[in-house]
Length: 221
Length: 260
Image (cartoon, chains in turn red, purple):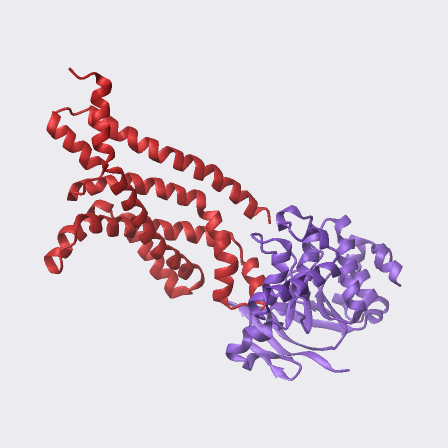
């Protein structure tokens, strides 16, 4: 008879194998969100009225649609019309798009908090608008955005559990395999909850305090 | 004397509000022009029109014989011929003092790192901030920040320096060190256009003073003219208000008195 500890350990060993997949989904999803969100934020702040309306509409849509709906759209919807895309890719794109809405908001807030004086000073040295954004405003805004961005990272890690529904063998899927094989409806999920906690908690914690410090440095005019 | 800047019938409005209404004046090389007037008079906006930071809606500005409104894609280049010093310093807070002063020559003039550093150090020395090169703006006092702001403008070797209320955000005891730096520049015959209410400074160095109200020039003249017999009622009232608030201009700044 296995002791409770051995049982938990065996669950853990099986489930943890899904961690690399969960983490790479996080990394890719976050990158997609960053690569779309940051330019959108810049366009929203500096691009004039047309871009401002477009980006705020985009943000609204992306933040209102549940990620699961997007996952299904990509996984079931796109293959029906064109190529079949694997579950991993569908989830990565869906979470990335959702995140782009949030990240665009985060960076917009950060860019706006930098204040027009920095832009004025850069432009009056003779820099172009693009140079001023790249060298002066964006570096400060990114630091300013760190705390909120860390929250987005934590949300993204947790949201990768949605990949479960399209058969990606990440943490949640593997926990459910254990449930199915052992008919144990509690312990596998407690194990997976603990894993998420151990991964997410330090991130929010460290990035949070670190971000607050940076924020203080930047706002010290 | 050669004219460096000619402002010609400059108008600027934001939405329906006309902030600058048909301002014209000339600035001779090596002189200091002081612009003053109540808040909301359009002084800061006018400065931003002069260096095309916010190009005017009507009228134009000449830098020597170049019509800045017709410079098109080279407008950024010509803007770098104006140094600008801001009321709230606007130092780049993620950069050290040295980098703040270096970045203009580096990025805009595309000067090599070593050369840009030499230029920056010279400018920093001129404002007596040499020992603070590796500090960040948040570690400096207001007066120090403003001196770095002046060094940043100087490093670009501008034809004209525009100063937008450079001492208005400073504690009284820090104003002196910044005024001293500005007096040094005036002594070196740098061309300056300065928005300020430091009448002591104006009296000491201004060759031309311009009183603005509600977006337009009310009265111009030498500093003697303004301090002895201003003509316009509005000007008289404003000057006496300044005296009420700050005391007599002669006693205002010890350092200015020293210079005289």
